[in-house]
Image (cartoon, rainbow, N blue to C red; front, side):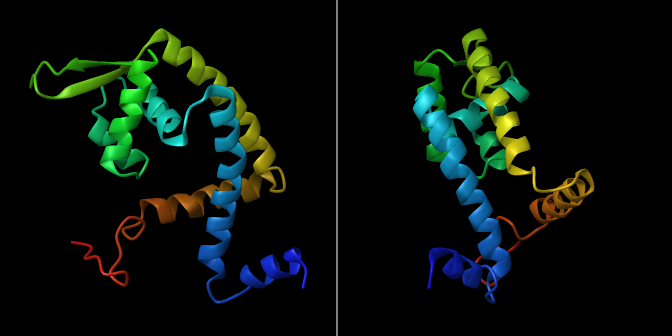
Length: 162
C-alpha cells in the first residue's frame, strides 16, 4: 500500500472529518511555520502573538489566548521573546498598574507586514483548488465550527462546557 493509499484510507475512515481538518492544518503549518521560523527565526506562537498585538494595540497577553488558543505560559514566553527582539513593548495599564498592555513597535509592524505578505500568498496558494464560491462556503462552515461551543471545550473528552 502506497503512502497516498494510506492517506486516502485515513481521510475516508470514521474519523475522516477530524483527520482532514488536522491534515490541512498540520500540512499548512509544516509549510508556513517552517518558512517563518527559518526566515524570521520566530516560532508560530510568537508571530501569531505579534499579529494579535498589531491588530489590537494595547491587548493584554492573556487575551491573545482567546484569539490563538495556546497555553498562557506559551503566550507569555512569546511576548517576552518579541519584547527582547524589539518587536513589542509593554506598558502598565492606566486603570491598573499591575496589568500590562502590549503594543507593536515600528520594527514589529515592519516585520509583521513582510510575514503577512508571504502568508497572503500562501493563503492564495493553499486555497487555489477551490472556486470563489467554494472558498466562501468553506470559510462560512469553518467559521461556524470555530464560533461554536465545542472547539475549545468537550463533554465527551471529560470537560464540562459550563
